[in-house]
Structures are given as structure tokens and as C-alpha cells.
Length: 252
Ligand code: PEP
Image (cartoon, rainbow, N blue to C red; front, side):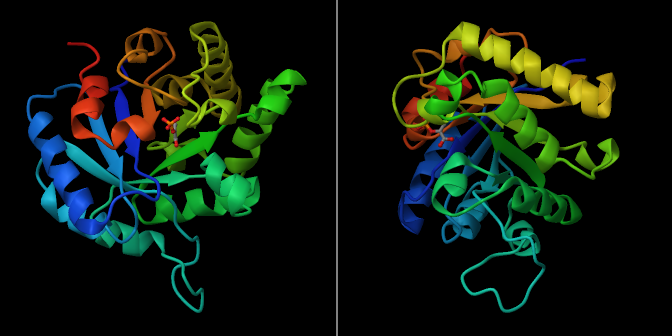
């Protein structure tokens, strides 16, 4: 089973609308000859429709960085999956560690958000990862098992056909210190077998598992060489089109 790699850029709380559009346009131009790699960028909610319109019909797909699981109603400040989809997104990042850390995201809210994404036809990118303390205490696999099992509880595999899993060790995000090849290999192998245990082998074989945490042009090749790594979720290095394209074109 060949899994098409996905290189995704999480722009977090960066760029005004015009700045986001400019970078997205540059990126789309640089991506015009990209084949066999899916490319996604996740701008802020405010920039999302502008960016989506500016790269429509190109190789660059759009994701949101979050959603709220209710369809509509009195939920001040929130945005629903349908709204995101209508604005031009095809992916949504769910359970990013910054949301878990600063905004009270839990495995239970993550599950509801995945459900809502699926109902609206958005591809969920489920982020999981251990903190430095949890790794030092040798709880990495316990934590990952819980995040995956609880986040995906109650779903049948057909519902999760577009799921993307992103392993992002919290201690590697934005620190410049990526996990080692050996650490990534070990975790991704574990996650593949966990998906098999939960949803059977064909599902495990078809599901993309990304690595995220200080991915840059200098380390992308060794990370993408790992058998169970099917792409990257990139923060800082995705903000600049000239830098991000070097990650996207890792195999050229
Ligand atoms: C991220 O925010 O998902 C991320 C991986 O950030 P960075 O690449 O900057 O470590």
C-alpha cells in the first residue's frame, strides 16, 4: 500500500490576510510541478477564505487549525466545521498540543471535533505527543495510546478513512530540537501497530502518520526516509515559501 506523503504547514497565529495571501501565492507557484506529495497550509481563520481563494485550483490545499464541534449557536468566538469547509478548507488540525496546553483541549473534545470534521467532509489531522516530563518518566507510549484510543473512541474505521495522525512530541515543537530518527522510528512503528490493533491492518496500512517538531530543510530527508513516516507537520519553517518548498521537495 503506497501512502501519498502529506507535507502540512501550520501557520499558527502568524500573518495578516494580505501577508498570508502573498506567501500562499508564492508557495502555489513553487509547487506547480510537485507530484505525488500532498501539500496543505493552515492559516488563521481570518485569512483562510482569502488564502483558499488565492490558491484555488493549485496543488496547495487548505486546512484550519481548529474547529468547534457544534454546528451553530450561541458559542461566541467559535467556528464550525461547516463554516470552515464552506470557506475552502479540506483539512482541519485537531488536538494540537498548543490547544491542549493553553486552551483546555481534552481527548474527549478532540473526539467530538473529529466527528464534526468527518460529518462536514473535512480530513482531520489528529495531533498527539508526549511532553518532555512524560518521556523522561518513560510514559511516552502510555500517553500516545491514551490520546489515540480516547480521541478515536466510538468511531468505525470507515468513518476514519481520511484521518491523518500527526506525532508531535511537545518538547520538539518550536524548539529547534527535532526528535531523533531512532525515536521517531520507534514511535511511528508503535502507532502503526496501535492503529492495526484498533481498526485492523488495512486501515493501519492506509493511514498517513506525520511527524512534527522542528522539521526543517536540513532534517526532512532523514525523517522522511523512515518507513512509517508519511509526511510532516511543519510550524516555523512553513512560514516562508522558499524554505517550505525545500521541505515539500525533500525528494528532489
Ligand atoms: C507545529 O506547530 O505543529 C510544529 C511542528 O512547529 P515547529 O515546526 O515550529 O516545531
